[in-house]
Structures are given as C-alpha cells and as structure tokens.
Picture 1 (cartoon, rainbow, N blue to C red):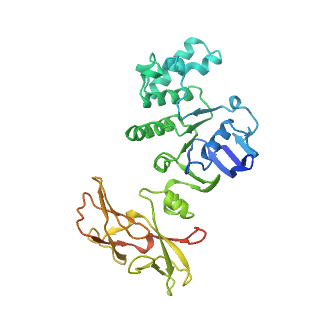
Picture 2: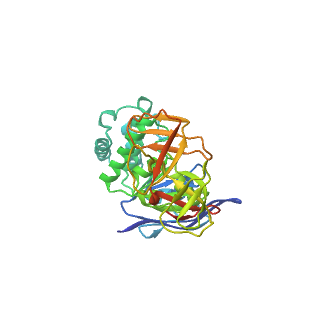
Picture 3: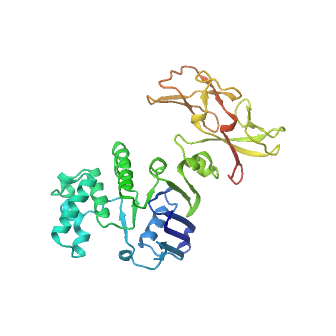
Length: 361
C-alpha cells in the first residue's frame, strides 16, 4: 500500500513545555486514522503541525514522499474541518462551498457545477441558497466538509468536528463522515477525545498521552491487546476494572485485594509473589445464572446499583476499588444484595503494578 503521510520524530516545544515527544506515524493512502486521548495530550497540536498551522521544533513531515515540514499551509494540499465549522456567515451555502475555487479564479459556471456535485454528495442540494444561521448543527458540519471536499486535497484533517453536536446527531454524523471517506477514497486524520468515535470510524487508532504515543494499531487489536494499563482503561465502555493482586505459588493464579481474597486463575505463568494489577472487562464478568462457563473463575460481589438500558443491564458494586459488572442478558432483573459472576482465565489481563506495562492476558 502506498504511503501518503509520514510523521517522523516530531518534537514540539512551547518554551520549556514539551508538547509533542518523538511522534512517528506512517499513514497509507486511503486510510482513516484517529488520534485519540485525554484533553491536553497533544492530539490537536499534532494535527495543526500536519496542517502547517504550527511549526515543529524538530522532525519531518512528508506527503507523497515530499518533505513539507517548512511549507506554508496553502502549499500543503490539505483540507481541514474545524470544530467550530468556520463558515462565512454572510455567504450562502453555495458561496461557502465555492469560496476556495473563486480565490483560484475558477470560472463561475464550473464553480457552480462543482458546488452542485458536492451538494449531492453531502446532502445539501436543497440548502444551497441558505445562510449558515438558517442551518442546523449537522447541516453546518456538512457544509464545512463539502467546502473541504471541493478542493480535492491529498488529505482531510478533522479537529473534533462532532463535539458541538448532540449525542444522536453525533452517531448519525459518524456514519456520514465514514461514508464520505469511503466514497472519496480519501486519506483522513481525525482528532477526537471520544474513544467510541475512534473505534467505530477509524482503520487505525493512535492513542496519545502527555504528548507521546502510548500505542497505535487497528481498533480491535488495541482493545484485545492493550500495551499498558492506560490504554486498557481508555479503550472500552464501560471502562476496564482494575484490582490489585499477588501471584500465587503456582504461578498461574492471583489473589485479588477484594473482600474474601478471591483467587483467580489466568492464562500463562508469572513469578510467584509478584505484585500485579488485574484487569477485568465488564462484558467478561458474566452472572453465573446467565451462562455456564466450565473452568471459569467465580466470585461474589455486593450490589449497590442496577442500571437498565434496555439492551444491557449494568451492576455497580461498592468494593474497593469499585467494579462495574455488565450482565450479558437483556432486561435482567437483579433484586439480590450480591451477585456471583464468572470470568474465564483467558479474559484476565495482568499489568505490572509499578509501570502499568501489560504482562499477560
């Protein structure tokens, strides 16, 4: 697959503050890449350096093999879609779409033809004569995307484009953006703080923290094989549960720091007496009356809260640390004060209790 965008050893300082710490990402042509992480992790700064809106301290940015590190934004052939839409309020939808073409002195008839074409792609055909103030949030976002598409750039950059929309519209627009990406065969880099957006939209996810990449790869690879506790806790909803533990003498079971000191077997072996952090995903904790799991670990936990969403029932316990158990049954009725759950040994994650690095699963 042809490599289109390369970020090599990107470093960025703001005075003494180290904003980006040796970023290396290779993006093949046509790939949809999501940069995700908590607020302040550097993902938007990284996107802005790619767009040329920020200069880097060291490293190199290449597009189609050409070094564009010091090129101004207008010469990078990249289109950016902002969180705030950045539409011209005094211009109609059609005028917003064709603004970049008019700057290039494209013939009016040709610009209008392209606007019609883009309007069909983005579902704006009946809105071309309206002004931004007359549009909904989702419609404004489609105009912003249409304005980027009409330039036919080498890559699209999205800076948290859905954060201003309500939950239902975000779900709809996720599908719209991904559909557009597929139909255009474009290369897209998408910044979000929402791991669900990243997991559902991207082919390749880059997880950042404190200006550095914690892990990158296909969404399900990150979910199934997190490199460390941070990634494991960041990817997944509800989040993974973490409990301290000590590896037993047999080297393949661990005693958890929970009431009654439950002992749970895990796949593989680890040195006896080792202090570890055990990770348990809520969906892997199955009420024992909901499924027969031969060879599974079992433990009984107090019930403090039951949340029913229709398709899933969540049970929250008050153990220290708190555990959230996802019951794998629809409309489950849980009226007891405690619940027995089972988890297969192969579904336990182990992390080094000091470094957080993944040890085994």
